[in-house]
Amino acid sequence: MKIGIVTYWKSTDNYGEQLQNYALQEYLRGLGHEPFLIRYDYEADTIYGTKPLPVRLLRACNPKRLAGYFKSRKNNRMYKKNCLEHPRGFEEFRKAHLSMSRIYSSIDDLRNDPPEADMYIAGSDQVWNTFGGKFSEMRNRLSAFFLDFGKEDVKRISYAASWGRTEIPEDEINLIRPLLAKFDAVSVREESGIGVCSRLGRKDAVLSPDPVLLHGAEVYRRLYRGPDVKIPEEKYLFFYFMNHDGDYDRRAVFEWAAAHDLKVVYVTDDWHEEFERSFPGLTGWLALIDNAEYVVTNSFHCSVVSLIFEKKFGVIKRTGSHAGMNTRMDSLFASFGVEPRYIEGRDFEILLRPADKVGIMWTDGQALPEQVIGSALR
Image (cartoon, rainbow, N blue to C red; front, side, top):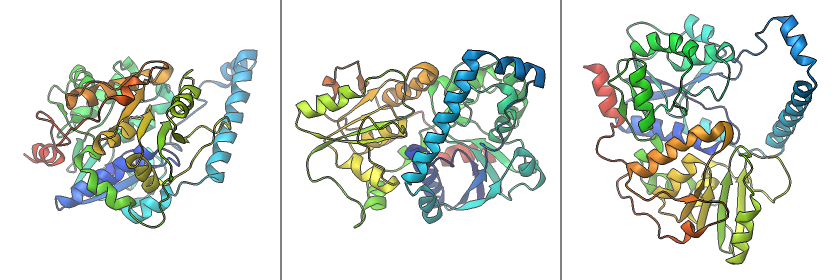
């Protein structure tokens, strides 16, 4: 069966985004299907500046908003400059390991020339999270991620889709509810997502493991084995920190590592120069996690990989606008019946706890892709 997958894919520095793409395609290929990534350009299809011109001019005259605007522009320039100066080879990885469609520039492009497939999948990753964006800006993206395109006879499912939030505004509900009703099967990644789906009329939603959890350690080790991967000779702590999140004092990680005679290999999407950083490709990122003495992260997928590689790791909780993402971490620990590995402030004692032996990567009650696909075909 030919299966088109709509998910996040464009990032130049989000390792988990790339890994979940690979993991789902690899698993579906193992089932005998022909999966491919529908390269929908969600960034180009996010519409900003939708308020009337007089309103936008008045808002622009607000000194606080004006300062925020220029700060945001500067930060975006610095971020793009950092990505250009330190490429991580994600596009090369996608070309080597993923089947992909042409790039679709908008929801209209998807509707006018939909990708040929027997089934569309929304997910995995936080495809149903607007990340605080306004409905007027995110409407097209939501339509695409709720599969509002293609022929009527194409089967539509979600696989381990994540809301990344628990409250949905009314204007979004009015768009989402009828689209979700057309799905032939719905599966989500977090327990909290079951409740959201239920409130939107899908009381049949099931829980599924993140695609990265569909494979054991050897699948990922095969990806990184080779002469091009460099591992530090000295013992090290691997520190992967995303989104320059909240007010967490990253120096605490470096100080704890120094007190334990460990080098820190620091990987981040932050462009600030306070700490020495590393810029591995996806295969190098996997190798660095697998060979680390300890792992510290605020990333869900880094935590997943740490569990798979049976590492001693600790999780820094997300804060502010990203706090809703902590639910996926709670679900991860609960799914495997392991004690949460959260770092509280400057207390890193959790790193000294023995590594968790999780064995099989999913638990009873979680629906695998073949089960979700099967329910859609009945």
